[in-house]
Amino acid sequence: MTQSLNSKSPTADAAFQNHIQNLEENGFTIASNVLTEDELRFLRGAIDSIYATYDPERDGLRKVEGYHFASNLVNKGAFFESIFLRSPVYDLARHLLGEDCILSSLNSLEPLKNQGNQGLHRDGPPVPDTGPIVANSLWAIDDMSKANGATRLVPGSHKTDAPPPDDEAGVVYAKIPAGSVIIINAHILHGASANPSGRRRRVMHGYFTRRGLPQQLEQRKYLSPEVQDRLSPLVRNVLALDDD
Ligand SMILES: O=C(O)CCC(=O)C(=O)O
Image (cartoon, rainbow, N blue to C red; front, side, top):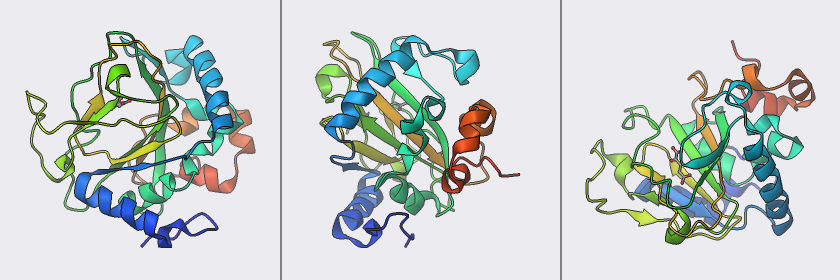
């Protein structure tokens, strides 16, 4: 059992235990109302201006064709500097990856009209005997459905090393309202789907890994000195800024 970072001790309550059961059985779980309406309003504006000014050199990862994309979000304003710790997201990542797990990257992805059908993939290898090494959290900034590119998942596939099915057998679409977060054992087969309607589908990805493994975006390298200077010890630790 992990020790919670939050005063309400969510790791002890029934909802948290239900998330753990979902993660074990299906490889994913959905937390509702993680973001407030005010935060969603703020995020929609902020993410749009970040998409518009995205620079792969400065922000570390190349832009993906067919999508709006942004990386290095921790460097994009105070809101992003600790949002990834919010309950129950980071507590569930810790449950999967160990109490000292770290943020690997904070990105955002939006499939564009009639584009964006990602192949089903795992974010890591099949789960090693020692347990999962990657977890992801997908934060819906807009309502998400099959019509606008919902994340699709193959429940239970985190327990196998099967290749992605050609016919998409067993796939489910995460139809969720804005403000919800899907937390996944990122060894599960999953991917964004095509966006036939073109309706907005902004999702933020808080990607975690075990401490000691490489980050998708080396936070120490891409966060500005001003941001690094003002981060709390807790956040510095989760970003692995002071690790060897
Ligand atoms: O945004 C999504 O729906 C999933 C994204 C994903 O799996 C990825 O970018 O690797």
